[in-house]
Structure formats: C-alpha cells, structure tokens
Image (cartoon, rainbow over all chains, first blue to last red; front, side, top):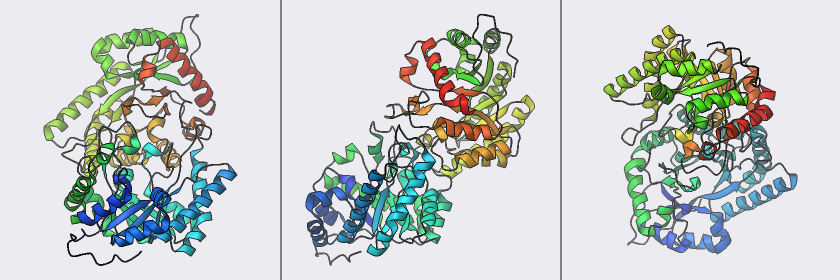
Length: 290
Length: 290
C-alpha cells in the first residue's frame, strides 16, 4: 500500500481505520468522491474497476495520491463458475488484469465475487469446485504481484446468481485447499452477519493469516426491489456492529474498515452528506469496538 | 398418524410420498383443497393453524378423514425470541395449544418457525439462546403428547424478522442441547439449498433420528417484492432437487414429502391446475430420487 502524503493544514484529521468504498457513492464522479473523503475525514478508499476503465489506471492513481488517500481494496475479480472452457479462460485472463490493476493502484487486496449458477447448470457442488480450481490457477500470478485474493463469502440470497461461496468457513476451506498465502477471505457484515459459526470462522481467518479485510453496512428491511441494492447505513437495520467488530478486533486485525453501502437513497444523497452520515455511524457503532 | 381410509374406485391412486402443504393454495377454501388433493392424486396434506381456527379442530379432522388424507404436519409453532417474560409465557402457552392441535389432527409433526430480532434487540446469539431455552420448556409437553417439534432452519434472508435458526446443523445443535427425542429438524429446500454443509447435516439428522420432515419448492429469481412469497414450482428456479432428495433418501427417510410453495401467481391459479403442476414436477424432479 502507498503511504498517504501529509495532509494540508485545513484538512480534518482522518478517522482511524475508516475507508469509503467507492460504490457507496456510486453515482458521484470519482474526483468529487476523493474530495468528499478529504473534506469528510476519510483516509481510505476502496475502488472499483469501473473507475480504472473510465479514468485510466495511471491517472486514477495520480488523483488518489494527490488526495493523500490510501487505496484499501480493488473490487472486483471473480466470476469463476462458468463450466465452458473458453469462458473460464476469459475469466482467468480478466482476473490477471484485475491483479495488475490492484498493483497499479497501490493496494494489495483484490476482492473476489465468485459467481453464481445458471438455469442450465444447477450443480452447486460442481460450481464451488470450479471456484477453487480457478483461484488455484490465479494464485501464482497474485503471489508474484504481491496481491492477495480476498474471497468474499456472499449472503445466501445471492447464491443463485452471484456468489456460490456462502460462508467465511467455506472461503477459508478454499484458501487452504489452494494452499497459497495469497488467498484469504474478506468479511462483509451484510453477507455474513447471520452465520452461526461467524465468531469461530473469523478467529480461524485471523489465526491463519487469511483475514484480508473488513467491510460494514447494515441489513435493512424491507428489502429493496433490487436486493443487491438493499444495504443500509450502520444502525438502520438489524446487525450488531459492536459484536462483529469485536470478533474482528480479537484476531489482532488492525487494517482498514470499509463502509460499503449500496442503496438508491444513499446514491440520491449529496456526497458530503452521505460521507458525514457514514463517518458518524462508523464512529458510533464500529470504531469503539475496533 | 391416522391410516387413510380406502379410496373410492374413481379416485386416482395417490402419488407415493406426495403431500400438499395447504399454504401452497392458501387462497382456496379448505374443502376445495381437500377435494383437489383427492382428485389430483395427492394423499397427504400439511395443515396450518389458520384452518383450525376457521373450521374448528374436530370438524377439520372429520373432513380430512372423510377425504381419506393423511395430515403430514401442522404449521406452525415457534416465535420464541421475545425477551419479555410475559411474551415468552404467552408464546409457550400458544405452542402448547399447537401441540394439542397436532394431536387432534392426527399428525405427530409440529413445524416451528423460531422467530426473529427487533430493532431494539439485535443480540443474535442471545435470541438463539432463548429459542433453545423455550424449546426445552416445551419438550415435555410434546413428549407426553407424542408430537415431535420440527425446528425449521430458515434461509438467512429471514434471520432478521422471522427465523434466527439458519442452518440444519444449528437446529440439530439445539435439539441435542435440549436433549429430548421429541425435538428435531425439518428440511425445506428453499431455506437450506445453499448450505455448504447440507449433505453432512442431513446425514447427521438421519443418524440421530431427528429428521422430521422434508419440504420442497424452488428458489426463483427475481425475488418477489414480498420475499416470503417468492417460492416457485420445482424446476422453475435454481435448486438441484435430485441432489438434495438423494441426501434425504440416503438417511433412510421414507416419510412424506410436502410441496410448500408461497407465490401470488400460484395462489391466482385454479387449484386443480396448481395441484396438477405440483404433481408433475414432483414426479419429474423429486420422486425418482426419493
């Protein structure tokens, strides 16, 4: 990771650990997002490949460095479940590019959304096996690049169409099966808060050096019509942030904590206001236990 | 369970194992549902307490017996997560009535939907503990009545508002903690199909004599706006029914298999047509592996 440059005197001190995932303010141009972070006391940013495509890798890195921000992760690689060999080769090629983009942005964490099923192929066990096989194919490139592949277990609401890895334990099983130190798991409260084995799995991730990140947002009800965009500000839903944050802290994790909210209401909010709410909720519900 | 009476000659032979959960055709009056089962080759029915309330226990039993149907379960007891002592007492009292109603209907399976969280109390571990404590309170009455309490692990989409028991393993942990043979788990494909430990957990349920039922319906996309009513006919979604049914069969389970679909489109279908589709899909996707 790059070291943030000294901030100008007028800039508020960044809140420790806090990183803004760029998708939380998806509809705001990236320059305004960087400025909102600087003005709002946010020291880290989780970027998405869409900004690399739009702005260009070198230019994006330049702007982030100029803002004095740390890139805490790149989203996203993955989509490893296709059975067709040509599709698998294309996915691996695209993931190698994603690893290189992470290097270019100065982050060592690439988040993997592993992919779902299709109506034509409902064999969940086989899809999960392909995820492990493809990550094994990718691991040497990641090791060489100094980038770690953060498997993101996804809430079972997304098993069918987005992510067949459903628990932190399953992500760790894959990482151990692959046998590379470059592979681990990222814990996103939205996806895993319900897991009866969460405390044990987070401890296991920490003990094995495979806890690669921590992301927070709340489970709110009613769900949005597009369930992917049904994530809320911490405190607006049902997740016990102090409890889960303590599990993370007990592993000795001292890395960044990304706030990653997807919701139309948040995207319709002026960016400075959204960042203020995110910061306040983070300081109330997450940071004291971190 | 009561023994079905001999069917009249004109009646089609019932499809082996097939039971219709009454909520699959929720909007149809119960007499028409019973007639549709008789005419459609369905030998079993899973009832809900709403029909007991509307029709009266003795009268409902009389009608089901007259139709020559077997009651395969009663839905539902549960809602054990309230922290307030008065609420807990009321829940236990209501569950004792539910056990008695199961006896009155001639079924030995009461399905438990264990209850969710509230915005005021987000302590998931404590809510889960209360579920176990309340089931332990209830178990003696169930034992005495000869009724088994089938904990229904619920899809994590419902953890917040409906069911804090999320996996079959967790249901079995509670059953073993309670230590009563009257407590076990029911496996509903909709709720558990995504579980990486499903095969092992079903085997464990079978080996410990705690596999109390098997219910089927599909996970379809997009989800309905009311996610509770987003269940589809087998074959319309992403669940691999032969694979899960084989897991059930391998335990030696030979009991009824209930089709339990909640969906506005199914409720808007004439009952005979819905029963025909259910029967066809059951014969195609479930029965061959059962």
